[in-house]
Length: 273
Image (cartoon, rainbow, N blue to C red; front, side, top):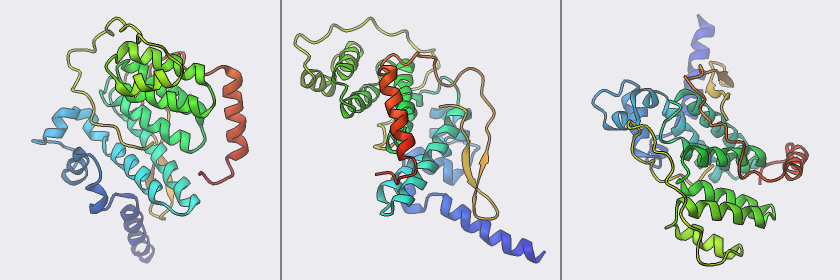
């Protein structure tokens, strides 16, 4: 009984440290306040209807992920930054596994998770996630821009131009893609628009909100334990594959990916920059 009295306050403290503070909630999308403050039921909650009942049930892990990215951005200690990025990564994976395979926020979630992988020097995973976002919705501009930036950072100008060219085929009005296309050596006239992508099912919800400036299925989410440490909690796989089998259309050659892996293995014991 005495041990229980000791453990309960520790668990409460761990949960308090894990969950966003009221000030942090104000920095998150509005649906986060609904989910975190009004519970999982979603009755008479507009954001629950917008997200879909099954997605609303798990969306708080997206909110946790964005909040951990925000904490990582503000962290002064490199170890704290890496720790928060790790928590963000696991919570993004959690919400990918828990939400519906055709959830309309998936491209945004893939891109934000990809940016977290980049900060953790896991470029191969980032590349695959950016490709998955494009495969899910070829008109999702942020995925092309993220891939372009990643290829430019790796010195892959041709690959970056290929991405910009393909992006303009689906988002011909994008000023950002036009700017990148010209900067990478592309010439006017700009690429012809591609044939309209196959429309999503009629029950698809409106476009996702503006992506967060952040940062693969099969992941787990970190949750506080009674001892104040982190444990893993597995989510059952929903029907269908959450991430499309893309073949990673815009991934760089295998030798470049091998160098990425070698670079990560050499840097994994170093603090994230």
